Length: 234
Image (cartoon, rainbow, N blue to C red):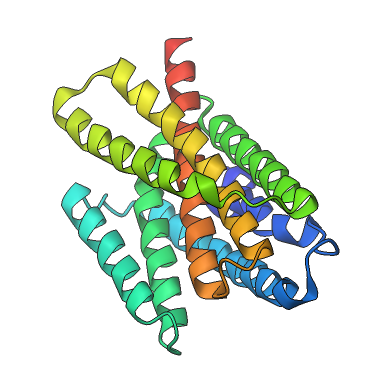
């Protein structure tokens, strides 16, 4: 695999993005939460990228849908239960490391395809631009986007259920629609969570990091799927 297109190289760009965002417009009482969130987010993205790289290099098998769901929701539940405990940080790294492991086989599949490296890099670039745009808008405008919460939750539940159904239906058009919907919802979640921090709705850097990480992960994989479908049709 071309080292310049390795998972660590392409995902490191996203990990460095928070440092480019200004927090000068954020009230001092919440700036600390935002700064801590961005630091932890950068660390988890780099750790996740390293695990994804190892999973890709050693060609580790995909965990399967059941293990993925149990692992993801189990660790997510554990983080919520321990959000105020010192054990929350190891749990966050366990979650992001696990998600990096699940990403490895996906990246392996794309890197084995003609032009797969460019597809991965483009998906990451679009993810980075979207993250910067959504975060910058929330930071500069300081608008309260809490009204989006219910819509985002309902949309993600529907998308997850549709995705599970499509495992059996195998409908390319439905897969395309799901990927597009998840990409839009993930961008909205970045806007929502950043606004939530800025306006004092989220005071836990751990929970804010998890929310932003999952949104970035879903955005990246959805864009990767969309671009991969487009490339396969050319």
